Image (cartoon, rainbow, N blue to C red; front, side, top):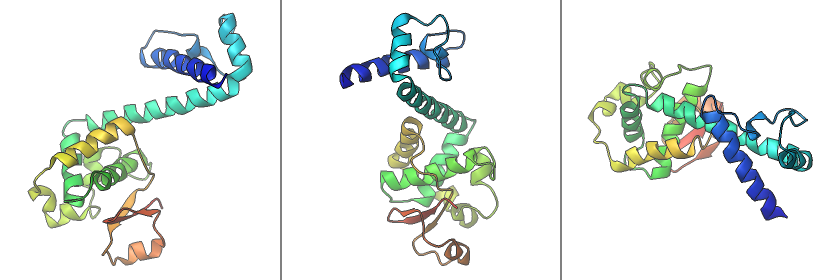
Length: 196
């Protein structure tokens, strides 16, 4: 029974995504809204909705949110010059770091783009005054880009945001600004990350 539910949910998700991503195409799954199936929905889908509606709707909503997030990330990264800027700041902030450490930096930049409190482009976020030390000290302009920094950005495009932090500082940072923030949300070996 559980396997049948999973298969049906996958089919509904696929139908829903097709309807959402291709303008003008409507699928039965794309018209599931609220607490009741919409008139005209096939009997099988209506029966499914009646039995599994809440669970299926929650899964579809979560997937839609993830798809929208990935779409927004892609728009940000594909803006003119944005991908190169992101790769370069990742390299400058996490030189010699692991793929995961580089992804963490990239996610932090994108989280700022998603936040109402920050500019909404990668270029504006990275070059905002007094935000990234590699801009101030010139490292941003002189680093040699590695494949792992490019891979970090590609991974971000595929997997989406992996944390919700908008600030980070190096382990050795003695800034009173970060001292006032208290405990970080997490540490990755080279940086401490904060969502507040």
